[in-house]
Image (cartoon, rainbow, N blue to C red; front, side, top):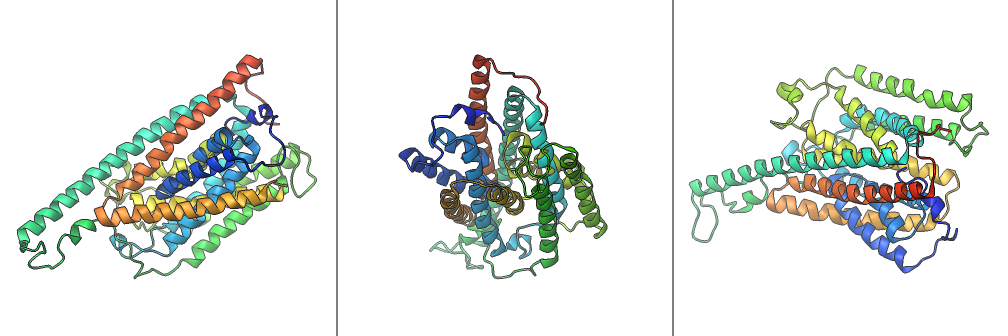
Length: 425
């Protein structure tokens, strides 16, 4: 976790959580952060943790556990909303692409475990530098993709306006032939009414749950490096590492079975021209999704943030539409965040009631953010606001988490602590 040793320096804080003004102020900031994050389908952990620690004055361990519950609350709101709506832009289908989630989830869960080990080994200064560089580049590419989609939408609006002018406009402002008026300008890209729903993929959801329970059972049996688990396993002993390494063949087996069970990945969205040269002419390689998820999971584990913030820019980069990217990422984040939340509960988490309150706050904020963003899309036909929302969250996370980590590095330096590579146990 970025800033892992910060909790050791916050010794002034009592073990009981104090319902003081800073905590309430942090809750307000987290409400705003959750409403922005929900639009892009990212968890928002990169914003929650610095706000809870810097503004709320919580120690890092408590802030991390709260963040897991808050991300879960926001993800639940996103998934419920996306399950209840469909998009006419994509043939009346649900925006969640379960095929991408199926191919990505095993590799993402594996990547998180690898990233956590790397986090324990890498020095704090290296993690901070890598985090700043990676998220700055990802923010730049995400905003560039947002501008790309904005130009496409502007061209669509312009053509719609020209088409209406050619058809003729009556004196009261309505189209003479179509009778639709300016309404067509408001819905050129995405209109979600929920009137035509596709069949719910129960089998795919069952496979995803099986993957989730398989990795979750391994985590519970293995425990952490401090010996916290459901078995009395020696921390970092041979059994600990055998169970840890077993995640590799488990993820490969799940991914291979999913690929074997289908001849071709049926995409819900067309590849956008100009993004992802290797994806042109429909020759999209299925393995790109597990590889992207593995990379996002590793980086998320190293930096202590959710994989959604990292896999969302990757999906946008290869040409997945913003609406589908946001819905699919929020669906995937739900699995990873619930796993973290359950682990905190089973390993003796404190202040559970307060964490649930924060999760409810994020649930409400996420629903509000989704409703506002979808209203903007319906009114102005600007699905690119989703991409810009991701860029804003990533930009703020870059500033907050980098500053947070820089303070850790400086304090370690002036205190004379060891700043080299460390053993994993």
